[in-house]
Structures are given as C-alpha cells and as structure tokens.
Image (cartoon, rainbow over all chains, first blue to last red; front, side):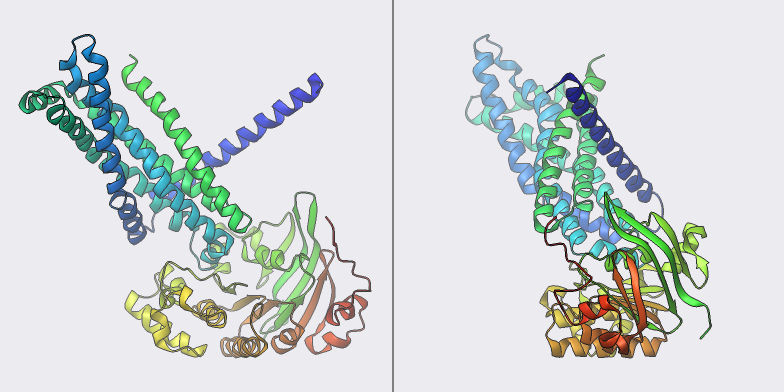
Amino acid sequence: MTPLNFLGAVGRATLSTLGAAGALAIFALTGLSHVVRPPFYFRLFWRAFINFAYFSLPVVALTAIFSGMVIALQSYTGFARYGATSAIANIVLISVVRELAPVLAGLMVAGRVGAAMSAELGTMRVTDQIDALRTLSTDPMKYLVAPRLLAGLLALPLLVLVADVLGVMGGFIVATLKLGFNPHTYIANSLNFLQWNDVALSLAKACVFGFIVSLMGCYYGYNSRGGAEGVGSATTSAVVSASILILSFDYVLTELFFAR
Amino acid sequence: MTDAPKIRVRGLVKNFGDKRVLAGVDLDVMHGTSMVIIGGSGSGKSVLLKCILGLVEPDAGTIEIDGEDLARLSSRARRAKRAEIGMLFQNAALFDSMPVWENVAFGLLAEHRVTRTEARVTAAEVLAQVGLAASVGDLSPSELSGGMQKRVGLARAIAAKPSILFFDEPTTGLDPIMGAVIDGLIVDCVKRLGSTAIAITHDMASARRIGDQAAMLSGGRIVWQGAAERLMDSGNAMVDQFTHGRREGPIQMELRR
C-alpha cells in the first residue's frame, strides 16, 4: 500500500465515521424535539416505560445483588492483608452506587431492552410498517422513537436506585453471614459514608445510559435494511454500540464529577 | 370530473447511488381514473409510488396533486395533501402490535377525528365493506390469512375516505380466486369513494380488472400509456413482450449484476 493509498483509506474512514456520528446526532435531536412537541403518545410511552423498568427488574436485581456479594468477598480478600477490613462496607457502597449499579444495569438493559427495540423497529422497517405510519399521517419519529427515548431516560434511574439498594444489600449479606461482620456496625458505616453526590452521580449516569440504550436501539432498528439479516445485524449493532458508549460515557461522567 | 389531471408527474428522476431507477417519468392520472402501472421487477414502480407519497425524495422533477406542485407547498400543506392518499402495501404492512380494528381506524385516531369508541364502530363498518365480520376486529394481524390481511390493509387504506388510492401489487402471494376477490373489492371501493387510483402489478389479469388506463415503466421511463383493455394487444413491442411473458424482445433482463 502506497502512502497515498493509506492516507486515502484513513480519510475515507474518517469521513464515514463523521457522517455516521452526524446522522446519529441528527436522529437524537429530532427524537428529543418530538419528546417536547405535541401530540404526545402517553400509551406508547407507558408501554415502553413498563417494558424498560418493570420487566427488566429481575435481571437488574440479580446482577446487583451478586455484584455486591462479589465485591464484599473480593475486597475482604485484598484488604485483610493490610488489616483494613473495616473499610469493606465503604468499598461496597462506593463501588455499587458510583459504578456497578449504573453500569451493569445499563449493560443489562442494553442486552434486554435495546436489542428488543432494535428488532421491533427493524422488523417494522423491513415490513413497510414504518412507511405505512407515514401514509397514515403519523410521524414515525414521534410515534415510535420519542416515547422510547423518554422511557429510557426516566426508567433506568428508577432501576438503578433499586440496584443501588440491592447491591449494598448483597455486600451486607456476605459481610454479615459469611465474614462475621456486625450487622448494625455494617449498616451504620454504610450510611455514614454515603454522600448525596454519590447518589446524584449514580442517577446522572443512569439517565445518560438509559438514553443511550434507547437511542441506539431506535437508531439501528429504524435504519435497518435488507430483511431478516438486516434486522439481525441492526440488533447486534445496537447492543454493541450501546455497551461501548455506556462504558465510554461512564468514564466521562466520572471524570466530570470527581476529577476536580 | 375536471380536465386537469388529479396527479401529474413530470421529469421525475431518482438515483440510488450509481443506479438510475427513474430517468424522467412523465405521467398524468385523471380524476376518478384507475391507472395500472406495469413493469419488470426493479423497474422503479414502487419507487414512483413512494416518491408521490413522500416516502422517497426524488432527485429531480415535479409532482402535482390537484394542480399544486408538492415541492412548492409548505410542509404542513404538503402533509395535508398527502393525507388524501390511502395506500395498500404489497404485504399489507399491518401493525402487528395492535388488533385489527385499531389497524383499520389508525388514521382516524391519529388525526384525532374520532374517539376510540367511535373508531371501533367505524372499523367494524369498514371491515364489512371488505367482506370481513366485525369479530375479525379483535384478532391480531398474525392470526389472519394472507387474503384477510390484504382485506384489512384495504380497509385501513379506505377508512379515512381518501380521494387517492395506491395499490402496490395487491394480488401478489394470493391464489387466483382470492386475487380476483381482492381486485373486485378494490374496484368497488374506488367506485364507491370516487377516488383516483394507481395500482402497480405484474398480474395481467389483475391489471385488466382494476385499471381503466395502463402505463408501462421500463428503463426508468413510461414507454407506453393507453387503455387497460388494450394491454394484451397494445402494438408496443415492450408491452407485448411483457404481457405475453416472452424472453426475446426489446427488454433485456439483467441476470447478472
């Protein structure tokens, strides 16, 4: 490959990436603009919200509990070497609330809800249902995308609040039943250590991650092409891109909140 | 009926990448006329309909409805104009997340013309017009046969009493008897509403049943237009090759890409 060819390939890849980012940004802004402009489809929002929040509860709850339990065990193993086991309640709390609950809940709903959104919208696209909406005086962005974006934005914070509590409870179960911690002391340590900005960060991350999950699910589903194979690859892209974006934005938000 | 066409298309061009699908389509469809457009697979028939519907943005050319150039209208006026069009999609494109009655009344509910209770009554009336019992309204689209799905699609297209109706291959995938039934319903609905209709089809029997006028799209242009009853003896070499299904003739099918 000559240097000129190499530069050409880099240039094409850059332009393609910028084009895709621009298309995604326009899609997101258009979807958000429909969230605040009537008519509003409350029934569709409620259906998406219940699907996002209520039906994701078991998987998010189990993930949070086991993560809290593992953190308690792992930190005990490490901290015992330095005689600092009294910090375990604080470590579990800060790990779960600041990091594990929002990130793992985000990843779980990306796999469960984001994939389902993408598959549903993708199927509607390849079976002409989205075109049919437009012929029936209905804007598909308003009818299909806006309710899902709003549901993601509002539902994940609720899920993460539950995951925060259950994750800490997981650590509590292991610490008291297996490691011999005093329950009252464990709870008192956790509550004393908890700061409001930890919860605020958790909820801020949850809002952003919920929006990302809905956005990627809708974007790839809405723009899918080419029948069953297209729907399948749209679903894969939605989950993979949402997962990567969640991890990237996790760093960005943590940096914004705590790197001062 | 007036002398001006209900739908006038001039110089319509649409490219997808390097492929020119429509290369300057000119077409007039008069008030109250049923126009059938025939043409090979990939000749751009569906793209032409989608351009008129606003689902695909043409690269050049004009589309007029009732003498008004859609491109010159405000977006609100354009939407209102296109709301006059009802469409029966090739695979019916029913919304599988809602029951049949809600599919049928979707356009009425979307425009807030009726309450849900009224919509349900209207849906039952429209279902009756396409030969379906009111009880079908409670079923899910996935519980219907292909022919019933087409009827429900037709009911949805006519529910808002549109002045223009489009039919995209209405008999594809149906047996000949059900195809004839659907054609009969289409003719009845168009006459009852006094609508102007465009149908695209490969099915010559269907074309002659539905159409007053016919046109053939080939190479991205209208190559012949005339009375639908003349389709089988049009005197045009392309139309004759197509309607008689001959391999040899002026139309060369692209077997390799």
